[in-house]
Image 1 (tube, rainbow, N blue to C red):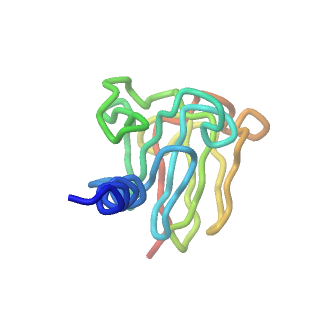
Image 2 (image 1 turned 60 degrees about the vertical axis):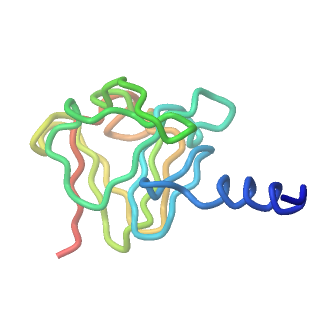
Length: 133
C-alpha cells in the first residue's frame, strides 16, 4: 500500500467520528446538544464530552466520553462546565434530576463556555430538557 493511501485513511479516520456525533476538542455537530467537562468547550483541558438528542432526566447514570471516543467511566452528574446547542430548539440544563432546581436555557445555535456565570452554575447540571415538540 502506498504511503499516500495510508495517510489518507488515517486522516479520514480522524475526521469521521465513530458512534458519537460530538467530537473531542469542543466540536458539536448539527442536531446535537453537547456537554463538556471543561470550560470553553474543553479547550486546552482534559477532553471529556458527551452529546444528546433526547431529554435525560438524570445524568448520574451517564458517563463522559474521552478524546478517543472511549468511555471515561466518570459520571456526568454535577460535572458540566460548558455546553453547546445545535439541536434546532431550546434546551434547558437543570441543577437536579427530573428537571428541578436552578436552570439555564440555551437557544438553538448557542453555546456557553463558562456555565459558572449563569443560573445553573459550574458543575451543577444533573438533567437536561430538550424542547423540540
